[in-house]
Image (cartoon, rainbow, N blue to C red; front, side, top):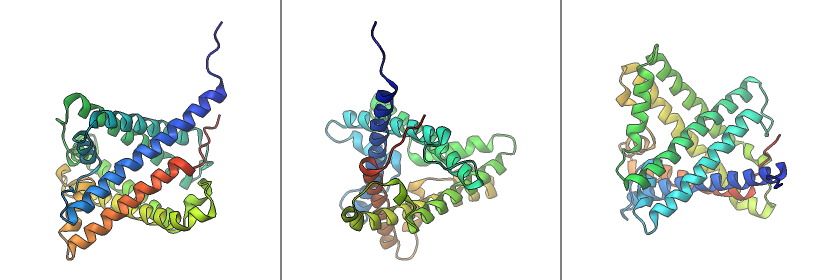
Length: 271
């Protein structure tokens, strides 16, 4: 009789899967920030969101293979986020703040699962897919079509703003320190990068939440948007190119933070 994998083997596999997930998320944000930065300096990049970045990957040599790996990683990240939310290996508890964190992890699991399926759909259709903005507007439109839909869209906006402010706080106070197993010499250069990246991603989240509030106020889901809309809004401000470069570099820094998580984060499957 052949025995199946032991519980220890299953946990170790989940650790590898989670680390692949952090790396995949990091690659997506490195592409988002890197392409936007290239666009600012006129080197052929594009100011797109995460879906636009995945569409760009399809155009490089062996792009479908790379997309497949990224999709697997994103599913790994979604699985890990689900475990974090349900089993609570990081010990957030069921206090008000802990519950909010765990709910946000479930939302993250859903969004990254959808992003993984989007990557797979690009491979199957060879790029024939809608952009990220359409996704945000479709979700806002679906919420608007539900009972009390206007209020649901508004609540979604408030949640996004809350998550954004929490990320800013996490970066400002370096709250990620307790989850990292990193040598002091590495922390010297890595922690400022992580703090900047988290704060910038938080500001982007808050702006996306503001778009949802605007959509609720105007009862118009077309006012909702994603990262690409944040780029466009920032670019239209005074000193727009400089501000856009600042945001793009910040998202690139968040990508580096996520890649560092894939190596140094303490991953405890629990159970």
